[in-house]
Every structure is written in structure tokens, then in C-alpha cells.
Image (cartoon, rainbow, N blue to C red; front, side, top):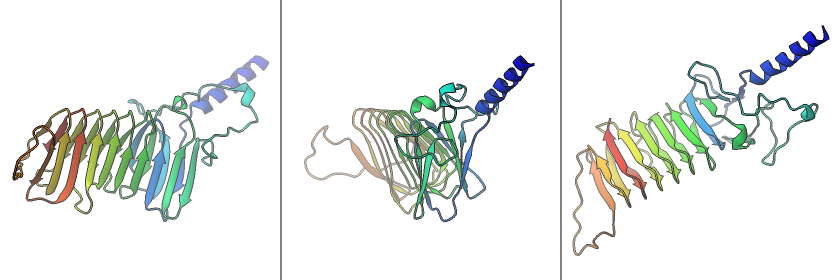
Length: 265
């Protein structure tokens, strides 16, 4: 009987370790959420005025769990983990969540070796600022708000968005599909070594700045080139200044090494 009891206790601990964990925080009075994590992050829209942090789901509908969730550390029994980046106030989920005025700052306290991907669910109109650290990436879908993304190695994918958008990455690709384009503020997308691939509705009004230092710029929009007067410096300026549909909000797309693609949706 003692062995059976021990086995049941062990299985219970394992089930708890693999349980679907999530953290929920009210967004009452919040206009912008700032998220920093060094892992793969998905951002989806929800119907409630809440932030929900969970794990990315697998194809069969189950959630991933953090890399160390299936490990039982006997030495840590009765102890609470502490982190260099702040205090975990998310019931053990490993985040620091702090409100500053109408901004909610959400900081991942765990290292990238301890994460296997996170999903964030928020209202579609909330402004987002996302920092993916050195090795993380961002996949954002369905927001009609102001979005800022900074990445190093990882890629940035934004789908069914309106902007304004500012996205930067050092070595990843940036892919954006707009449902429509907000005309209130400029849009800027830049990758140092990756491609920048953007799809816009065919009727989008925009002023364009397109540039690839070592690659090429491709589009199926009808663009008109501005003629420069006087002598030109051959090969020095790779920037294309033009308009589509009579001009509108400024859209800047640039890559140092990769190609730039601007497509009609």
C-alpha cells in the first residue's frame, strides 16, 4: 500500500507539472501593454478586457509547458524562486506585472532556456509594445491598434493589422499583412539582414520610402518615380521615394541585406 500511495503522489505531482497554466490580469484603465520576453510569443485577440498569458498550443489543441515544468526539484521544496529581473507577482507563472498610469508593463523573469513559447490574449484595440530580447520572435494577429516590435535574431509576423506599426529586427524577416492602413501615423519596418514583406489593400493611399542597400525592391503596385534635377551620384542612393493612389500616410520599408517586397492584397 505504501508503494501505491507513493506512486499516486508522484503521478499527482507530474499531472500538476503538466497542467495547463495561465495568468489573467484586468486591463481596466489600461491603454497600452508593454511585453518583454526572450521566447517565441503569439499575440491573439480576445473578447474580454483582460490580459491572459498562457502557453502556445500544439496542433492537437494542447498547450506546451515550460522546459522545466516536468522536472521535480526535491531540493526546492518549501522554497520560493526569486529572479534578478524582479518579483514574480503572477502566482508562479514567472512574470513581473506592474501598472504605471495607463500602461501595463509585463516582464518575463525566466530565461529563454526555461520557456517553450507563450501566448498573450488581449483586446484588439489595446496598444502593444513588444521586446523579444536576443532570441525571441513575435507573431501578432488581429489588432487594430498601435504596435511596436523590437527583435534581434527572431522574426516578426503581423497579420490582419491596421497600424500604426513600427518594427525592427537585426537578422529576422518582417512579414506584415494589413486589413487596412491607419492614416494617422507613419509606418516603419526595418530589418538589417532579413527580408521585409508587406501586403496592403490595393486602394491604400500612401507615400512610400523603399530601400534595400544590398538587395532589391519588388512590387506589383503602380508607382511613379520622382525625377531629380541636376547631376546624380551614381550608386549612392538606393532609396525609392514614390506614392500609391495619390499619396497618404508615410510607409517606410527598408532592409540592409535582404529584399523588400510590397504586394497588393
